Image (cartoon, rainbow, N blue to C red; front, side):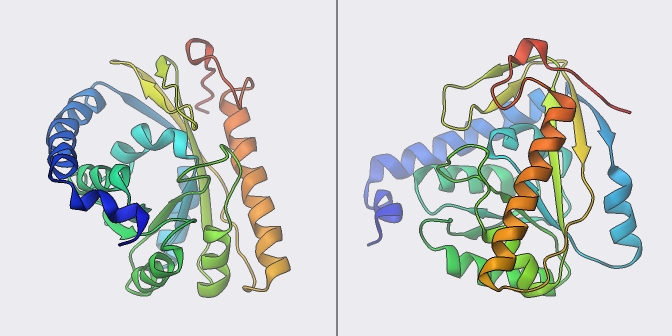
Length: 236
């Protein structure tokens, strides 16, 4: 059995996954119900919808919590690791209307990308936490750029920043917006990748990484290690 899925052999681990997913969803639902979103750049997604283009959404792993409620119930499929954490994450996001392609940039990635290609071909959007699942933080992995080059679908980068939050002591410094927080989301221009040649994908990866960093800095000039209490909103 692959190392990422070895946890399934443990009855205790399976029970933990079930408990986390059961308790986590209503907590996130209740917390998200108190947040207010203010969006910049939503027209980029609207324009793609008008011409029938299906996007590949891309963002940093540390903004999963506020990203999930914003894009809920749109049929988006995300890559989720087959490990212990990936399982409870997949179960929680399913409650918000997401699908999961199981795999990661380190294990099972090819299988997940095949599923993502099929998802795009069926007209459903997909999403990547491009520096996941293990980091390094704010360094884009090549999966989203490769998929864009293989399918012709555009990458749409976005970043979210809360005006009041806690920061987890994790590799991605996951941001946890406080109750009543206002969350700014900055959605960038679509990025197209011409093909899957190694040099083209690498150039696309670098452009995506630069776009995400620019979107983040426009909302929080102190990034990539922001003080959550001094985050700057720029919701124009």
